[in-house]
Amino acid sequence: MDVKGSGAITDLTDNLFIIWRNKGREKALQRVQAGEQLSEKDQQLLGAPASVLMLEKQRNGEGWEGGVPLFLDEQSHQFITSEGGSPYNYIANMPKSEYDEIWKQENVLAL
Image (tube, rainbow, N blue to C red; front, side, top):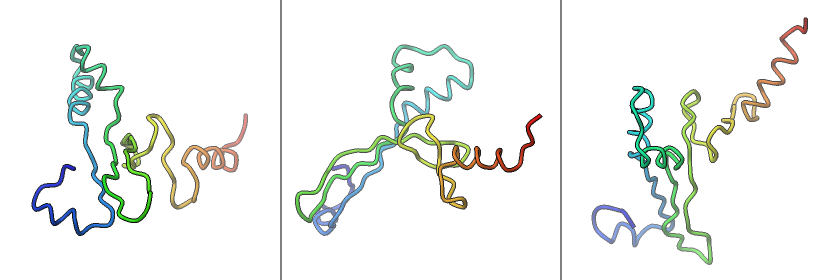
């Protein structure tokens, strides 16, 4: 576990989640935006998730422990589970891609 401080902190918890941030990928994305040449390592980092949500401890029962890869959608500021996936529109209570289609059908006239 990657928790700083006393081991008693993790002993008292029922569930322990850790969010790991891929700083190498962030630096590679900055190089892309700056138009710099990417190394082979940078190209591999771009294929990796932006973050990983890890469940490190589950006290009750035979529960699942592991990680979920997450990708940041910069426009909505949401983490989603697949790169290029559609963020969720909480006001419309549906994924953004579905809401966009419905809005187009109702508000855009076909020529």
